[in-house]
Image (cartoon, rainbow, N blue to C red; front, top):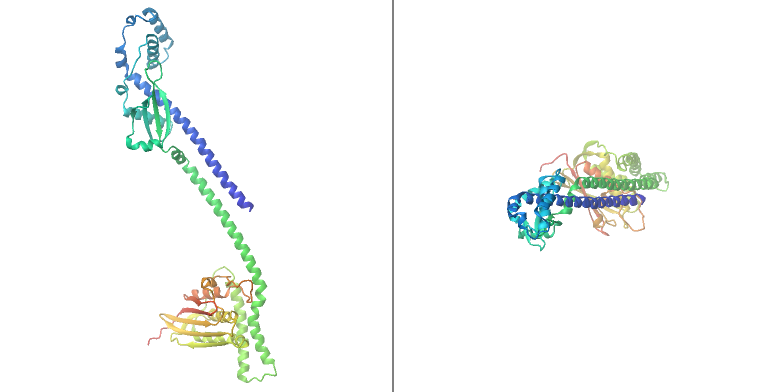
Length: 466
C-alpha cells in the first residue's frame, strides 16, 4: 500500500513538474516574442525612414516660407546645429528622425508617408524571419499591419486562412506613433500552434520522463507479481506438505488391502488369487517409489521437463498394467473397468513409466470424482499416424468453462466450500505435460452430472497396412 502511494506521489510530482515547466517556458517564449516584436517594428521603421528620404525631403519648403512660425530662420538653424552636435555619436537615421521631429513639431509639417511606396511584403517577412531566427525561435506565423481603425494595409495571409488566424496567438504593438507621423500603425504577429510548439520543444524531456515512469510502473507491477507468486508458491508448498500424507495413502492403502487379504485366514485363496495380490503389491510398491520421485522432482518443480526414456512397446499392455494396479481400489467400491481395444496400430515409442502414470492418474480421478459406483470404459482406435485412447467415466463431470483450466498446474475445479477429495491439482497437469512431451494431444469432453471422457492421441511407431 505504501509503495502504491509513493508511486502515485511520484507520478503526481512528475505531472506537476511538467506543467510548471511548461507554463514557465510559455511565459519566457511570450516575453521573447514581445521583444522580437519590438525589434521587428524598429527594423520596419528604419526601413520606412531609409526609403523615405527621396519622398520626404523634396516636400520641405524653405524655412522662411513659414511666416506664422514663432521661430526665425537663424534661431531655428542654431537649434538644429546644436542638436546635431549633441548627437554626433548617433547614426544618420537617428539624427534625421530627431531633426524631422523638431521641424514637424515647431513648423507643423504634418508629414504623411505612403507605406505602399516604402514597404514590401517580402521584405517584411524577411525581417520577421531574421529576428525570430536570431532568438532561436522556429515558429509558423502570419503578420499584419493595420491602421488604428483595423483596416489591413499589409499581410501575408488570405481569406481562406482566417480560421488559422482566429486560432493563433496574437502579439500586437503600435508603431509610427511619434509626432512626425500623422497616424500610427499597428503591427501584429500571429503565431500558429503556439502551445504545441512549446510542447514540441519538450519532446525529448517528455519522452525520457515517460520512459522512466513506465519503467518504474513496470518494475512495481513486476515486483508485486513476484511477491504474489512467491506467496502463492509458499502456500502451495505448505498445502503440498500438509496433504502429502493423505495423497500417498492411495497406493499404500492398495498394498495394505492386498496384504490383509493374504493374511486373512477366513478367506480361502487359491494360487491364482495369491499371485494376483502379490503382483499387485509388487507393482504398487515399484510404482509408488518411482511415482513419488517423478512427481516431486519434475511435476511440482518449475525447473525443466522430465527426461523421457523411450521404448517400443504395446500400448494396450501398459493400459492393462495400470488397470491391475488400481483394480483392488475399484473392487473395494464395487467398481468396474471395461476395455474395448480395437486399434491395430498399438505399438508406440514412449516412456513406459510416464505413460503408465498417465493412465493410472486418469483412472484414479475417475475413482475419486464420482458419487456413483465407479464405471470406466477404456477404448483404443486407429487414427491417421497414431492411436487414440478414449477413457469414459460416470463421475460428477466438469463444467465447460473449466475444460481448459483442469490441465493447468495446481488448478482444482471449484466445488464450493466442500472439499471431499484431497489433492494438489497436479494430476491432469502432469498428464498433459507427458502427452505433449510425446508430441501427442489430450482433450476432455464433459458435462456436469454426466461424467467425463478423456481423449489421448499418441503417435504410433509402426503403421500396419491393410
